[in-house]
Length: 132
Image (tube, rainbow, N blue to C red; front, side, top):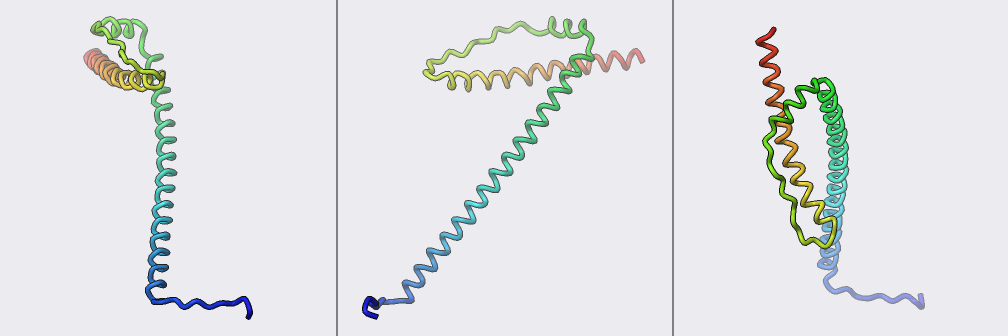
């Protein structure tokens, strides 16, 4: 008992209350952290699903290209309006910045090509209906 000292704590109820409030905040922060981890896992799962869907779409699109006659594809390419694509002029120091500016344009051009292909597909279906 020689090394034991007792310190008097003034307002022990207030100190206990502070400890409990701090513990409560820590538990709330841990809950929110686990929610964030769960959301990240869900995001990764959704991205994986998206990648597989895109691969499947690309495969189906390739099959469509194979099934369409070459003459029809040439006709579709001839019907395309000739527009000049402007190259992005940037004064970027990093190649990453240039790539990020080019990618949105590529994405924008794909839907228009898809729309043209859908229109040509509808025309083919209409011709088949008139023949059959």
